[in-house]
Image 1 (cartoon, rainbow, N blue to C red):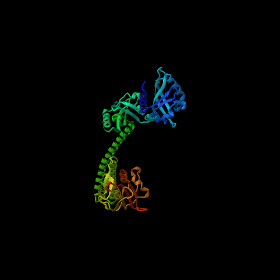
Image 2: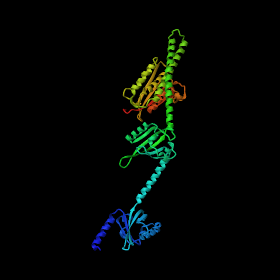
Image 3: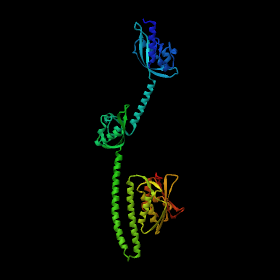
Image 4: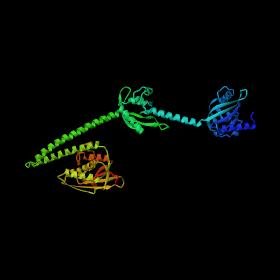
Length: 492
């Protein structure tokens, strides 16, 4: 037998060890009365050692509805009929909170082998259980969303081995089951191996791929167009362990694009053919008419008719030119930048003067170099040419007066340009229709061409606006005022 002081030392070491462990350690006798209650037990339950020593552990800590099972289990433990491991048990703390604890038991026996005391070593798993439950709920929600999205979803290894797919992708690729599809590698579906190489190079360099288009072959051999959106996923060590993303069948869209491109190419061909052949025809007609016009013996009534015919041929040539301009406007990429308004505007003025050699055009304006900067492109000259050309054409006087004034709008980000003429004006019923001639085929006092429609399309390209007012309010016969709003350039 150890001396009393040595026994006390051993007990002190034991107590310190029990308190130092992060586990709950509780000791009970064969009647279930508490004999040991370590520091961790005190922290979890809120009870001090003095409050629990000698009290029955089941009556103190176990919820009422769980007590019968625990009493029977405890008696079987004492009799050695159950293993030391115990299931998860709820404990009620001093504040009334329930904590979930997982136990393992150690038995202390006497010389006869009878159990005299049981030490329980427990781990509080309440927070872990709540986290696990939250993860399970999150996984269930993710899986529900993953399986219900109508777009194909997938996850593969960097080498292309498919790990997971949703039902939409299984159906898209023509398989009967997910398990059947998972036997294949992603690269097997590419019609062109080069496309797979491009995808792999892109994802390795950027770690994300958006809008990647390729042709896939379904299980039944059908070729479809798909669009991939993929990202690389890294693990805790920073290594890429999988790719995940979406796959959408865009076959119908691609077929429509191909048809649209073919239609556009046919349209361009017909426009070019029309412009070339009709211009040749117009040139022949104009040469013949001009030759006849040069005959000094031509009667007056025939000369008037001849001049009218020449005017119609010129209108035809103008229409062809505008159709070509419209075509280039629709196909030319939109590349806008800050430009000085003056050079484009004055180039349009010179072009209009050349177009009307038999008229004197008097134009006053405040547009000067480096005064007004606008956000536009190379169609800016075309815009003002059509407005000024319309004004000169509709004014029947040999002397055409046009006033153009620009101003910086202080309430928004536009330069305002007003083009005032002294022609026949625009009735209220025509003020909106003149910018959409080619849509409604309307005839009116401002002519039947598409020049003003072209102006509106150019302004839509810029994010600008145009409308027409009376030069003299309330009397359209005094001429028109075309108001143009152009986005202001950054140099303003």
